[in-house]
Amino acid sequence: KTLAFLGEGGRKGKGIARNRNGSEAPRDEAKRDEARTMANENLWKDAEHQLKELDLDLEDEDGNNPWDAAAENEVTEDSHWEYWMRKNANEGKGDAVFNGLEYKPVSVMMPVPAKDETPYWGWFKKGTGVSK
Image (cartoon, rainbow, N blue to C red; front, side):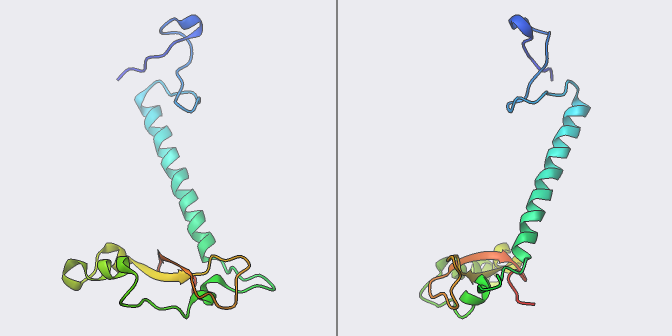
């Protein structure tokens, strides 16, 4: 593969090759692979940081925990179709999401009330929001 680029004055072959975001593009395959690897590592670092933020104790001095505020809500048979669909997949064994994550309520109201009757329901990493 060759990288076509225009240099100063629009002449081909002179100047600096640029990526879509304007950063300098590496000219050889090894450098491009290294740049892609670095980008993937940074992506995973960001994802891990976000997961760690979910695990933080979100209680303020005067506030309530958003997980505890919604904890009394339950999945009912006449609602939460996605939960039931995933649970009954694979002949009742559940799909990968059902088996790997927890379907839990969490309050998204600010400030967090003591009890939230209409929480957001979502799939979360197992153990997220558990009071310590």
